Length: 189
Image (cartoon, rainbow, N blue to C red):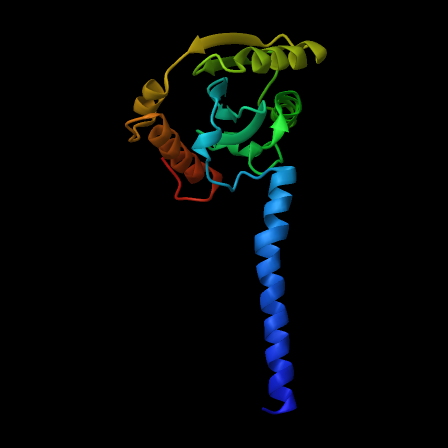
């Protein structure tokens, strides 16, 4: 082999190793640290889903894991994508709710006349999420109306007109539905 061929192969190998390292080590580590809406749902981490609907204009859900972190978001409409890839995932409930509320305020989705409907799908960590939302609103002297409701995943599945026979498959279908709004999949509509 000539020197030029060896150098060319070495360059290709170095580029290949760098690319592999980037995709295997750096990107997952950044997503783990900062959170990303591009990941697919890990149903094994699921402890609860809490949905927030603001004035029927912004509808999304946060998924909580056993570490009391917001580990995933579902986007149920186009406006909720203002939260897409904002580093909310992997934050504690306190930090995540504060980030969410700040982003919603900055995008003018919450004002003094707003009504926030908080839907719980079970009791796991629900009160902590509810308390953080109320604390944020009180701190910002906001007079938002809060409505609380209970729902099952099966009820929400029917509303979204998606498939699913059990908790895991319903959550997976919700994730696919959500990806359509976040730009990863095809738009729903």
